[in-house]
Image (cartoon, rainbow, N blue to C red; front, side):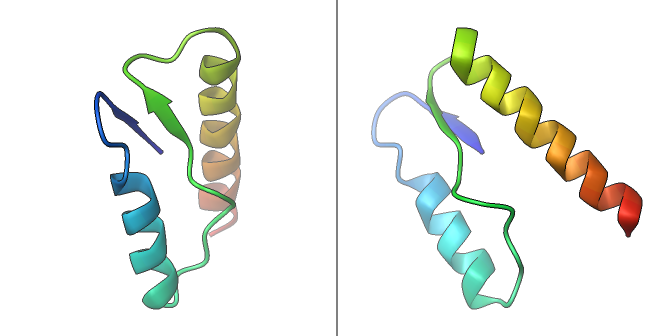
Length: 58
């Protein structure tokens, strides 16, 4: 996930590099312009919960 103020291409680039390295990603990258509010903030929290669940299983 990541926030951006202009271009917003970093999340897609990082996601592709992770996949190319054989790392499993949870789903499509989460991009937020500037600061998350409302639904975007909820999506960030849910992604954090998913990451925590995976980390606990490891």
